[in-house]
Image (cartoon, rainbow, N blue to C red; front, top):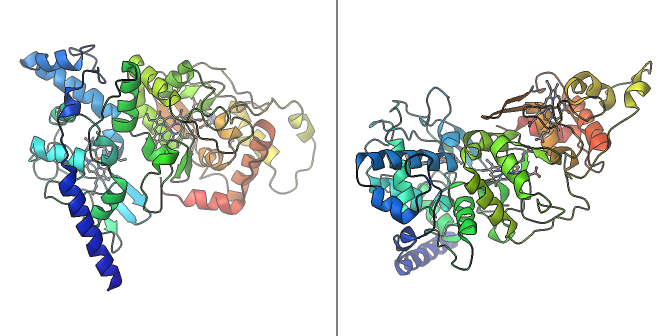
Length: 456
Ligand code: HEC
Ligand code: HEC
Ligand code: HEC
């Protein structure tokens, strides 16, 4: 009873807050800054002149082109495509602590997709997290970030989605446990974790900074993975971008802290990482970040990538207690293989397993093959995964391999989940961190077993 009363008072509080908030969608839309511009007809146009150009057919094509660019910046395809032959038709299962959510079909199919949605319905979903029937959407859909995107840009995405092939496909129903299957409960989640409203440019900052902020805080939703969460699964904005774990992967601290974050990276390192997935001597993108690079950031133009760097470098650095940057560990191994010759190996041996499974590509010295050419087999020395304080990503890379297709290269490291047992993965990981990375990062067989069980 008391809990019910508390719920009702929270609800009343929410209504009062909502009534007084009076969200006004328009001002940021008049923003003079050049927002992420599409390549093609509208390229380079300022928001104002772009607006004026949106009259004729050519401008309509420009709008669609811009929408395609923005849909990539927002990575809609990653979550809304379960099967590559059915782009945007949904059906991706997203596991949350409360159960499994299946993403909806957002192709223009009238029955199973969003073909019957009005522009107003679409805007309301992106800005307020509310579906066509007025139901609350779950924040597995990043509306807490998309709310910052201008009305003009949301409508450009809509214009683009209208042009994709309509696919008749109804994704499975969500499997959420009580009470999380009650959508209206999101009212409370929103109350504490959602701040509706468009991006407001900061006139004291440069156009470049504002552009970066608009992308990072909005469409590109970097915080969804890189910001730690509170017990309600909302973002802890005080520690923004200081690193978080999702589906077994640690999305590293990307604040400008020199030791715990990416403060020592040059703008060029970041641009290269986001456009190719590889910043030699620093990091490679595997797992969820490989997908972000493949589907989203590789398509951003240099100006936008640079702006993201300018904005990230301006954020408050968050220290995590590391003593050395994760990309500053390791030296080549000189003697291990010779030691192995003729030696009797007892049980599971990391060095032997490394030579047998990994050295063909990464060399027994750990220095890799092909140096920094696109698609090279990277050095494990000065690599953020081998040097991280926690070996989870390393074990995940061994279990799942790396696949990343960009205009630069088809990158492939095979998965070893089907070939190596948990104790073998643990032994190789510990060998790699000791020889090439951060020797303090060890991993147990139980931890590997847990990581193996994570749904990807
Ligand atoms: C991180 C994953 C993720 C990304 C990225 C994402 N979505 Fe979604 N989206 C979801 C999920 C999950 C839902 C369903 C939420 C629910 O069931 O309450 C959803 C729901 C929607 C809906 C409501 C559809 C309906 O039938 O109710 C629309 C519209 C939508 N997304 C559009 C987009 C667009 C446009 C983008 C890119 C700008 C995008 N989404 C990117 C996960 C994502
Ligand atoms: C879907 C989750 C997800 C999203 C969204 C995401 N990241 Fe990541 N990011 C990760 C993960 C996981 C890693 C670790 C990858 C690895 O171990 O190879 C990572 C790694 C990185 C790294 C390398 C750090 C290092 O030291 O190795 C950078 C830089 C980075 N992300 C920047 C960004 C930026 C900028 C954005 C927004 C444009 C973004 N990420 C969006 C999950 C994500
Ligand atoms: C067939 C060649 C091949 C084999 C065998 C191989 N790798 Fe890789 N490895 C790669 C490639 C390719 C990449 C990704 C390069 C890139 O991102 O551009 C990679 C990346 C990595 C990374 C960096 C991941 C990141 O996110 O930064 C680590 C660590 C790694 N491999 C360890 C291993 C270990 C340990 C083994 C043995 C169990 C192994 N590799 C076996 C080719 C291989």
